Length: 124
Image (cartoon, rainbow, N blue to C red; front, side, top):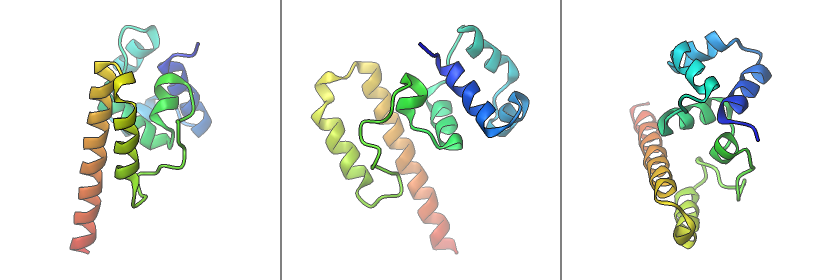
């Protein structure tokens, strides 16, 4: 099974960048990247979200190596939050506590990004 690091390394290679450039662009120390490679640690939730966004891949693929359950859902869609919360509620009993926390953090992050984007539009 591929690790999160191996998927990140694959994405870096596919984008034709160096690991150093990747680290600089995302504010990751090369030491942290080395720790991820050795399996000493893994990226935190917010960093995984940044990496997924940077490369345009789903968190399902980045973390688990599998395609998302519903690839139609997009952050920019009008019904994004409704659909995500509906799916989350329907499957809530299937999730481990740390998975629930991860999803809740992701929803909060997506709402934050949307509010920042809306503020930028209001100021224009």
